[in-house]
Each structure stands twice: as structure tokens, then as C-alpha cells.
Length: 117
Image (cartoon, rainbow, N blue to C red; front, side):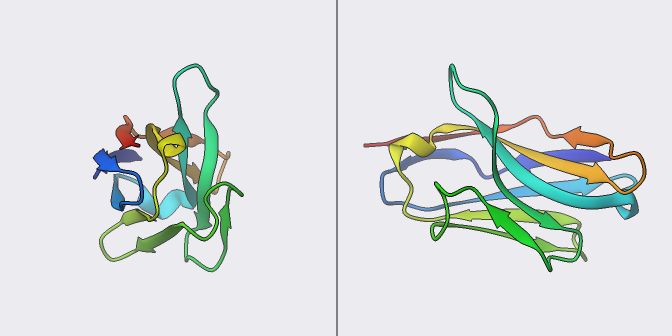
């Protein structure tokens, strides 16, 4: 499984961005996917996750009501719509996929999101 993120950038506080994660390879093996982020000097943390059919979603408390995770199975792409962005949302955002068998985790290269105050 290969994952490629896009959509990061610089935005002012209160603005919006949409991140995309395009999956390729053995996408049929994916059980669930998610978005993580890592700010400088901090540990990587879960932002949002969903199962392969989108029936289950989970969000970090810090982004509930502002971020929405979704997917398009026909395009093998996952999205993260981020609204009402805050400076504390500044981080490198990573796409993650975990397989059914073995629970193997795959990661994208990351995309930088910077929110200015």
C-alpha cells in the first residue's frame, strides 16, 4: 500500500484546508485509515480515523466539530476537511492505513499545515 498526501499549506486562523490521501497498491487489504499529525517537539497524535466503508469515524477532542474525515472508495482517496483552523493545528499531517491481516500500518510522507495567527 502506498499513500500520498496533498493539500497542505499556509492559512490564516479561522480558515479552511482540505487534505487528500491517495492510496494505491493493495488497497483491498485496508481495514481502516486515519490522519495523524506531529507538531515540532511533540509526539505524533491521532486526529481522525475511519473504517474502510466510512461507517465508523473517530476524532480527537481538539478537532471535533471542526474537522471531518471522509473517503471516496471509487477514487481510493481519503480526505480531511479542516475548518476554523487554529494556530495550534500547525503540524505535519500524515495519512495512515492499517491492513485487515496482520494489522500492518502504512504511512504517507506527510504534508505541512501552517496556521498563522
